[in-house]
Image (cartoon, rainbow, N blue to C red; front, side):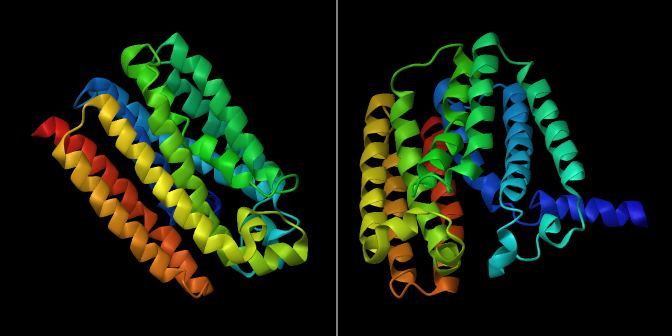
Length: 286
């Protein structure tokens, strides 16, 4: 019984019951795999990146909680996290983080030298993001860099090279990440101000909706350029129209800046990622 209880706490620590982070990391990575392979990727690589995405996101949650363990108690949304209430010790969390990262690295060893080298950058990005909110009002940019790093890794694993066009998809995903994580930061803005934590939502202030909208427009423009570079056809461009509609709905949700609506807008980005992947996959399937 005690073992089962501890396992539940570990699953809570890695947000196993809240897969949105894994999904937002997964969709652009899958897009990159399909683009690199010009269709269905190698089954082995697909399995590696599916499991690797889950492991790295889980490890990222632990780093985030370790970094914020002294301030999460002052934020209503995070006040019941295991490290805050002491149901998981710092030593246990750090041990679990190391285990997850070792497992993720073991997966990368089944790829190639370039992908292994890129994975080291991924570790740096994922580990540094939680601490950026103490030094900059744009930690979301670092998160975007981390959440987009699966894109060059996917191309490296599939093709052994980094074609210049992939960086358009990388930039599009970075812009999109800053947009949706600003919606997320709008949820905690009042608490963050009180505890002295920085975020894009605080920096943008009353211009938050406008800047999120501009980021969404830039995301769509960069995704269109991505489609041009990779020669993607009507399924992809149809997906961009769907994404434009989803972005409009998010703007509607955050219009009054109500906390539940902002959080709903953030969660809604799962559909944006799904639409993007569907557009890429259908282009090669039809």
